[in-house]
Image 1: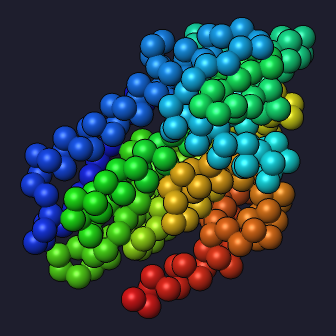
Image 2 (image 1 turned 180 degrees about the vertical axis):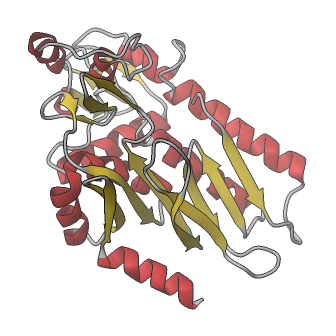
Length: 307
């Protein structure tokens, strides 16, 4: 996926040897890279993306599962989440085929928008079909799915305590050898340095953060985020700097953090509250930031502190 991963685990009786765990993890990631990567022309999803409108192609279960997950998130969030934004990301210079950071004109955006939207995708048996020349990009959920797959395999191989991190998405289970919990830091959305905004304890939970402080460009004093609004085809313009989601599924946490980032500080927070999502929002205010969290997030943090 063009990034890094890390697996930490606690050795105990019944746990497979290190070489086996490494090989099994590598096998999963190599398989998902072949199926889901938009950074290699021979992946299953890039093969599908190259098809013209009106065509179908047999796709592996992982591709179909992620398309279904994307559709569910799209329906839940009034299309704030969309897996078919790759042409727009490329147009703005953020996608795998994006060559330069640029501010495209309205006509260019409108033309590309004709090839964007979950409504153009459908699954027929083992086939994925398109009614328009859409291109699917799994970068908003693939890493979370990979974390879940690796974590599940570790448990099958006897590991009961682990911390899995893939391209920044994390999931932890159990405790360290000294009995202390796995602790991770939520990064403050700063451009100049890496600072912990808050430290939380994880046991059986995944964490995903989406933000606009790492991938953006500026033109004429204006900031353009890599987070695009599917309704406008343009970078989001609200004051939400980052949002962190906790969930039992890294796949869900990954997708939800992206959706909430698109929705913004007001609509995103209300959506998270209504759906009882454990979410932590960092919002720009003047030269600084303010934070707010849902009751679900506070309950998770409180439960961790009491263990």
